[in-house]
Length: 172
Image 1: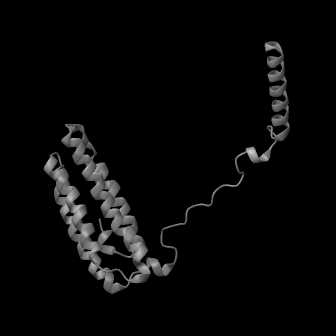
Image 2: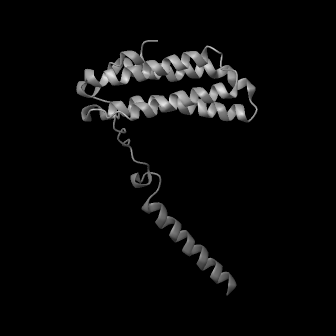
Image 3: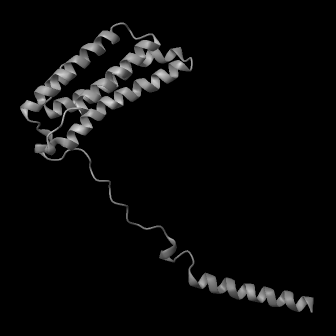
């Protein structure tokens, strides 16, 4: 009896395997990943000239904030920023500049561009906050990256400033 059950089980398994292979083997397109790629994410950068062109009255409010920030950054960077308080001061300059800029109400047609611009200052703040954390953990070699990080943050800021007509932010 036991042999008959085994034979029956083997026969059932063979029938199931044959059925399954006929239902969807390697040639079944439903088992393949889709051949279309997902759509690209929508571009968040300003697209129209109106979004990039800020009114002169607004530019006059932004430029002095940038000039002040650049003077402060130059003063701290000129000391070679080899102390933790200097790194913290750099983070603070980017943070306070971002806050001052965010305090201005951008024209509605420029809101997206202006948010991107203020985020460049937030990025600078983030770079130096992370550097401060490294220094706080005892990594004194992190000080060597200060000039590189200032350049990274300021390049992004200056590129956007030139694009949007903030001459005071792209002067250096």
